[in-house]
Length: 215
Image 1 (cartoon, helix red, strand yellow):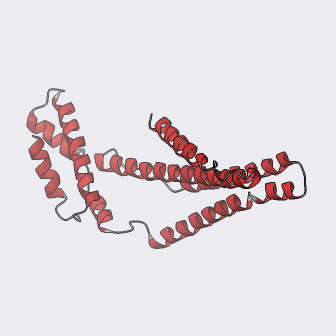
Image 2 (cartoon, one colour):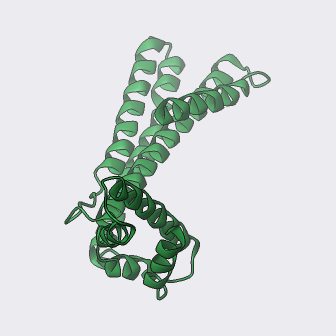
Image 3 (cartoon, helix red, strand yellow):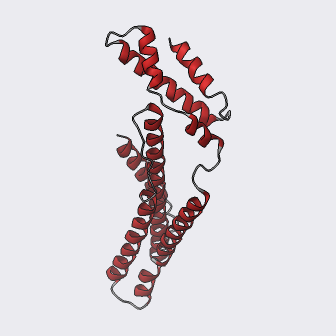
């Protein structure tokens, strides 16, 4: 029955572009159909009934195939506007990270309280990180129009892409902070010979965050 399901999916996607993304999608759908088939068969249905019910649960894949054919499935104007908004948030965040190095230097140059300068720097970092995270999670999510497998898969794929974007934003923020700390320690304490260890600590922090999120 697995071969029969594979043939059905291959036939359904015969007009889809021959790309790695298409192949991954077909494999995912085949695995889901096989699980659905086995679940239905356990309820006492015949093989043919289980097969037909599993196939009907897949839904209409024509829209999904069309999206695979298009480089950008979103409306072009909406896509451009989203890109402009995203670029603005990222530019502001990067600018804040860069500007955040100025207060500690000024306070040190004028022999003022270093803790105030450091506090202002951390505020800049917090605002910049918040902008990056907001930019990632504010992107529109896909909502399935029914309970078919295709709609569930499209919704899952959309949410997964957003999760990846959020993690990229978090990692970007982490490494901007690490870079800033590296230069601060190197300049203020003239520790160029040892400050590179900060980058090893950064790798460890990123791995810990990845492990916690996956768990």
